[in-house]
Length: 283
Image 1: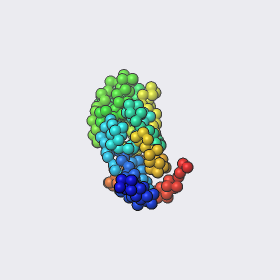
Image 2 (image 1 turned 135 degrees about the horizontal axis):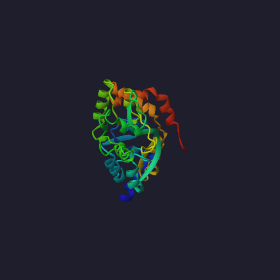
Image 3 (image 1 turned 90 degrees about the vertical axis):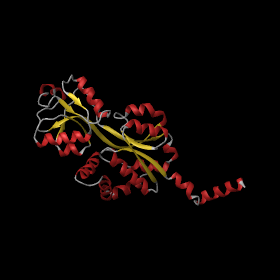
Image 4 (image 1 turned 45 degrees about the vertical axis):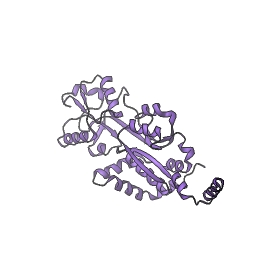
């Protein structure tokens, strides 16, 4: 009976009748961090996979360490990450269990910025204007790659300003308050970000090269993902979202749209491009 069952199952698979078994192969477990650069990339790629018939199970993580641990263990199969600088430590720690699938965007830059009306152009000029900045640089969440680099910059340049830990929301509020009053403020910020456009800021020059150069975003997966999921890999590798589009999606969110709606509107506006992605094959 066991041999007969195996023979029947094999025949059903060959005919495409064993849908419960095949359906499992069409599930992709995707991880993400709920940040304004990664959320659009994740949402667009999710849509492309779903159009190919995949079911995408999405899990959000609060920070890189948890995300990479989940990826290495197999709790999720893929995640978008900046593995060359921002998440290099996590990639290095787990790389024997991971693989790079494809690039999906490029140009992330992080640094210390001021409003354009502030006549300071370089990190080297912060000390001589420390009083005007209230003796502080307004930071974001502790433990982020940006705060780690900002802390390195404080040391490298011998700054007499305190790097204040907080949150992205608190930094944004402080930046808005200062620009509304045309006051001096120094913040840690990144591009792509709607804040850079909204508040008309400028990055300070970094002659010592403490902050990383513009960085790439990559889809990475558990080791063996591409070999085991060639159709999904083809769909993922076709996706490329320019930095300007990520910024535009987040600007729409800042103006009142939900992130889901902003992504849906982008997808609708770029239907022809997505159709072209679906025609891209590497074989």
